[in-house]
Length: 226
Image (cartoon, rainbow, N blue to C red; front, side, top):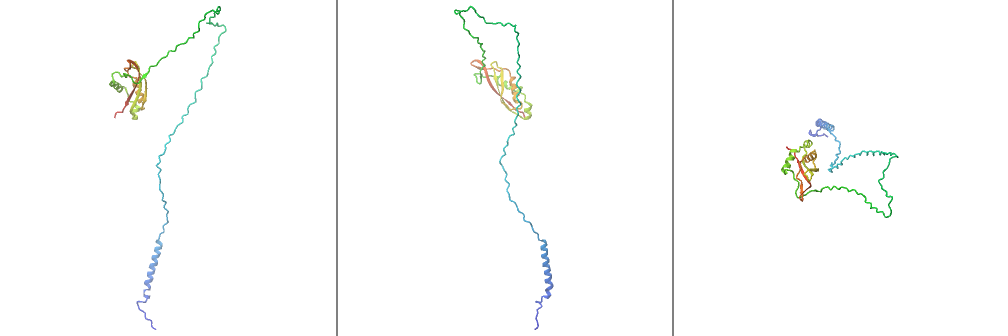
């Protein structure tokens, strides 16, 4: 029986094409295998940073001062006064040998020395007529402006403010017992005391027509110019 083959069904003519296609596909697979890359897995840590806003307590550093030991007590020196035996001791006691039961004896009265009590005058804060600087308030302000010298330490440190001074105006107008009620430092307190002590005598305060001691408070303001 004669086989009838169609030229279209004959695969021998297409064998070379199929071989080329197979080589191309194999070559493509090999290239793809070499170009394939693998990546390692990395674990990502997810965390949240918390900031502590609590204010830190500042503990001051204290320094314990070591007190020096007290000085030793002074040595007690006993002085012996040697008295000669031949010294005659005069007795001031008079003995009445002839006294009898009818003799009148005066009562003994002890001698008491009277202590002089010095009564300190009372210091007033408010009186009928308060003390006044000689010449009035304007004269007092002028005196302070002309005599106060701004301390160099306060000038360099930029210290300024009001120093409150208290003092006593005596019955004769003199100024005494100058003290600082509230200061600002930098040498201003000492300067205020110095100027107050240089003031002339005031007109004293009067109470019931008599001069008395009066406590007087005075503010002195220190201000830097410019």
